[in-house]
Every structure is written in C-alpha cells, then in structure tokens.
Image (cartoon, rainbow, N blue to C red; front, side, top):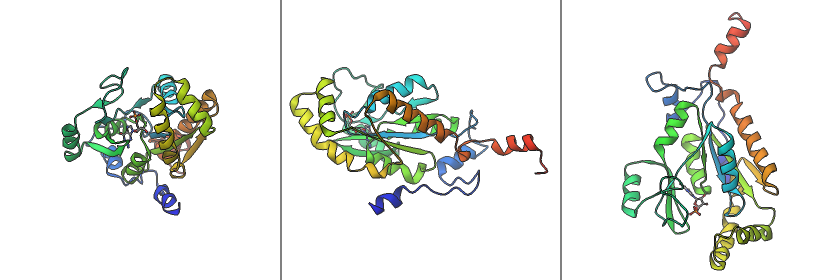
Length: 244
Ligand code: 5GP
C-alpha cells in the first residue's frame, strides 16, 4: 500500500511555471502551438470494475461539458456488436498494435483480459496544448503509466459499486452479457477494485445523478487549481498594479 501511495504522491509545484514534464514544457514553449484557453488541460482517468457505472458517467459528462473529449484507445480485442471502429475503440490487428508500440505512438498500453489496449499519444498532446480536457476510460495499469510523464495534469477517479451484489445485479439488468461472461466479470471486479487506493478520488456510485455531480465538482475544482490557470500572474498584476 505504501508503495502505491508514494507512487501517486502528486509532485509539488513550486512556482506557477514550475512544470517539469516534457509535455508541459512543450506547452510552455513559445515555438510550439500555444494554449488557446487560459488554463492547462486535465487528463481525467475514470476507472472502475465493469458495471459500476463508468460508461454512463462518462457519457453524461461528455454530453454536458464541451471542454471534455474522450480518449479513444486502440485495442486488439474483437469488436462487439453495437460497437463502431474509431468511436468506441480503434480496432487494430496484433501486428498494427506492435507497430504502434515500436513507433512510440502510445502514452500507455497494457494487457487487459487477454487483449492489448493502448492510449494514442497524439490527441493527448494536442488537448494539453489547447488547454482542453481528456477523459480516459482505462484501467489501473494505464493510470500508473501516465503518472510519471503527466502527473501534473492527471486527475484520477475510481468508481466503486455500493456492493458486489448490486454490481452483479447491474450486470444482469444491462443485458449485454451471458451468464458466463457475468461470472467472469465478477471474478475480475475484485482484482480491479483492489487498486482503489492508487486513485486520488474514490466515489461510491449509489446514485448516478449524485455520482455525476461529484465527478463534475471534482473536474471544476481541478480546473481552478492555481497551477492550472495560465495568465494569472498577468491578471493579478493588472488587478493590483506592478508595485505589489
Ligand atoms: P472493454 O474491453 O470491456 O471495453 O474494456 C476492458 C477494460 O480495458 C476496461 O477496464 C477499460 O477501462 C480498459 N481499457 C480500455 N482502454 C484502455 C487503454 O487504452 N489502456 C488501458 N490501460 N486500459 C484500457
């Protein structure tokens, strides 16, 4: 547990411009595209076991907040009925996934449930440069890998179900899976939940509306952090004059 805690301890930022990651430095470099907003973008990671409400919360957040867009992962798993390539995932072959790994096109990737999943780098860099937020539906392995390079931008949220019984009930009522798949998801749920302490925010999803309100409050507070607001020095200088 201690090792998880120290891994996720947020770095102290000593000054308004005290960014150390290459991505953050690029965002500050006048030779690169400058932020179009007056704040730095957030990388919002939302993890949970399957059935805890992650997809619904994500959908509601995206539809109610124009500043947030979804990160579309690449995966080697087969497409499910109802899924669309390029919308739910970029469905790629093993060979293409290998190539993307070799070419350094992922900010993180991991084996999950026997398939590989990875987060493409380009949209993340673009969002950070533009001061926009990206939402990631990725597991704990992905959250861990983002921390070293993007820790200053990361906001990690874990959704817990109110009970394992309720989780199983939700998996049944959403009607997507066979009994066998549900049993498998329930076995894997405990493994995923085991990583709850690696996240900054942990919410128990008893009620979807209340949970969404909490996620929105977290996003709003994180956007207001001093270090994320560019141009504050100039604003305050104008406000009270340069002699202060
Ligand atoms: P599913 O196959 O049910 O869509 O997703 C299975 C699991 O993979 C989910 O827990 C999801 O959060 C995780 N996942 C999806 N995309 C990525 C990714 O790009 N990176 C990582 N590390 N996990 C992912």
